[in-house]
Every structure is written in C-alpha cells, then in structure tokens.
Length: 97
Image (cartoon, rainbow, N blue to C red; front, side, top):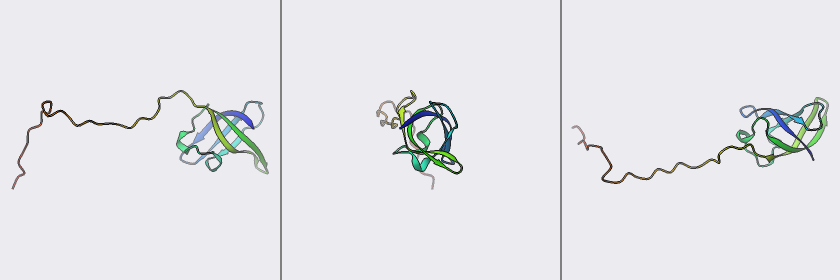
C-alpha cells in the first residue's frame, strides 16, 4: 500500500486528489473507493493509505483508509436535560378561545 496526504476533497461531489508521499503525479480519489469512511469525514492534509491503480486518464486510488485522523474533537450527541421545576421561569398561558 502507498501513503500520502489528501490534497483536496469535495464531499458534495465525492472526488478529490491525494499527494503521494513519494512524490510524482497526484492520485485521483473517489468516495466509492474509501473503505468505510463517510464522504464528509475526509479532510484536507489527512494522511491516508491506498492501493494505486493506473488508467488511461491517470492514476486513481482504491481501498483508501485514514492513517492519522487530524486532531479534532470527537462528535458528541447533544444531551438536553429537562430543567429543574424550580428553575423554570416560564409563565403558563391558557389557550385563547
């Protein structure tokens, strides 16, 4: 497997390019060849490992996986606890007829 960094990636189009660590021509990246990575999760400059394939239009990557995720806080679900009965400053209104 070869390694490189994501040079650019468009999650809306699902395409991008990888700059190989060994140098040379950029490698085309398509979201259909990312192994269990959601398209929105790929970020610029992330290190990836991939298998290189050659086509008439140039090299492309298959079996792409992230090696070192960029430091970003993990996604957390929002938890909203109901307010304490004493702390609620709402006034109740009767529905208008």
